[in-house]
Image 1 (tube, rainbow, N blue to C red):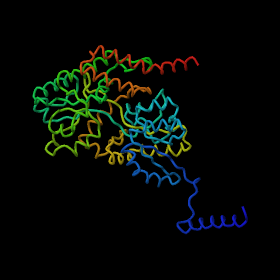
Image 2 (image 1 turned 45 degrees about the vertical axis):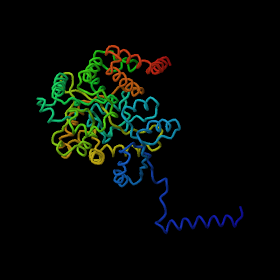
Image 3 (image 1 turned 135 degrees about the vertical axis):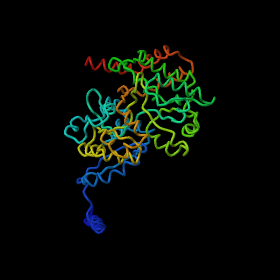
Length: 429
């Protein structure tokens, strides 16, 4: 290049620098700012940005770059990112996915970061915290919690002579029978959409028998506990208490609940806001929530929701951990709840007057003390899908309960075959 050419390029560069100075001073060098790449899903990914200005103000050397992912594509996107060594620094991860990404070696253990941190494990609901522990190590911090319990129509229970929501299975079955006896021909006592596995899973988690045995190597669905759970679930359909339909066959769950088509519905915390918005004003005083009944008293339910995880490949682990600590603060959790309706995973946050006085959220506070994680194996979602399918086939008469549990064990053992091979190989090596 000639001297003239080099001179022109130098003048152009000087012009750009002077222009930047005139527009607002010299730009900050990239080395002065740590950028955290944060992937979040669904509605949470939309609203979390409202919480970040305070974090960036109090941490001037850190900037957060949020990428929102749709839930339908999130799992594949994360696997692709891991395969391409392009994972974010932190991510919102569904609790049932944690074991899978731990098995891949994608997640950073958080035990050392938790030591001396403001994130107090004892302040979190125990069952929710347990979803983040795999083989004795912690891999995530709960961000929000999800569980299932009873939504019910008080007025319909009153008409059927049921004075209080049932707390045990015998009381529950008596209440269902009383509701069905008083119901119109096309009305039912409870809605249990057959394409939703969560109600059956909750009944199964209430049993003493684990769903998998031998450290997750084999299915344990032939156990007395799961046979009892499946039998009770199927009996609700065979007795005519629940309609044998999927959610897609129901025109509108809120309209049908408002019409009194069913008196009980097992659902999650997002429906508190939906029922408040969608039910007719005349029905608003008549609905409420209650913990799930158990075999002999108040029972367990599923430990769902999402957690915040730190990827092992991150080059900004220290800064990313500060963001996790910030989002896990009880006051920030309450702001997040106000934006999303998601329930806080820390007990301290539930001391807030507005949340504690919410009559519909109160039952969730009670239920969260009795939640249990699903088996922490990477293959769990495939197994749960087989559970749902076989339960539906049993309801429709294809299987007897004894046949169904044996078939479910057989399918589960086939799904876990590779896991057994890998564990056996690891033991030999």
